[in-house]
Image (cartoon, rainbow, N blue to C red):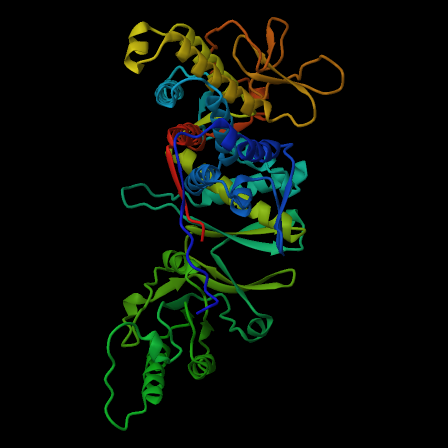
Length: 563
């Protein structure tokens, strides 16, 4: 007991946060996030001081899960952003970038935190109302009848993740497969009980990206020994029994409750006899394949194989729902008599191999389930590509639910900043009275809010170029760092071309407030070059950034466990 240290008291910090206490750690986190932002964002290698796995990434899902933080405010900020990512899969760096910028700027203001929070939430409500309105100039309707639209949406996600190490040709190839997998998940039927299908990602390391493919059904990885011994059904329909209970014969796997044994009864023998009775019933019911989430007793497994029944155990919990969905089999959680209604059916069962990896291919009668065989050259780029493709699939589903997209490439941020500046310049006295603030306080907070949005847009440039905003549509334009003053032919989102009639201003500098125009008509030549953002993810990221910054400003008591 002498080796145990006494428990330390928790450290309590009272009073509002000071700019000095948070400024340096917040600046470090902000620089990490900002330098990763966008298609040309810099990769980060994260590892701990005692060794272990080294993570190379530039995307928020992996980055924020890998870094260690000590300051409680930064922990709160990162926890908020990670919760957003878990729900929407995208715009995590946007939310973290904006939140850091808002927090740093608001802490420098000599205004009551309560007043800042009230004004900021009013500005956020104005933004959300605007992007949900019919006259919003930074969104467009999702066109699911166009493959070009779907390809641009998925391509926008892939192009923003440089650690995937994709060429332009490979990015287009993966985008096409993502759209194909998404369309396969859409059922042909209509009605209240119709469910979307499922796409299961199967990572394969060591092959070229262009060897990736979509196959109908589910792939289950097996060892080479099992591969050589697996049964060939010659393309005939398969009757499947799916067990969620262990068939190992151990009493510890029989569930909760009390087991009473008569004297002289061998418990292990009785359990094994019950398993063999179950196996014989499966054979008599002409079950072709037995799949178990847990372990099957070796003797039972051998008996079933001798009867030409394919046995797959140690499946794990993850594929159970998918296999049940595609076959119609109900997971069996009992060792008693199995009803034939619990069994499912598959159209076919094959063997597939990708490189040195071997799989059992469960093929259903429909296309409700498909497997995305995702290949890449090394482990790091494969993990990054896997996470990115899962995010892209989620974004397509979110867009199906909310059929709008926001313009990407920083144009939404500059457009919203211009709109808020225009609205703030014409603020009514009744609104100031409702917020209980002066006009100067409102203008200062509004200026910080707009500057933070523009700061996020400027974060897309990492090579020393200049970022410009046009004073008509309020879109973002880039000037390459070549010493030339010539602006790119297209704006950040790709919807507009440069023209002589436009007036320009450096992003972040002052300009006369104006009401940005609405851009609903898209030229056919511009459709292939669009950069798009998920509407739901970006709007929620904006709300998370503002709400988290407001919460940090409102902190007055922090309790830290020192143990």
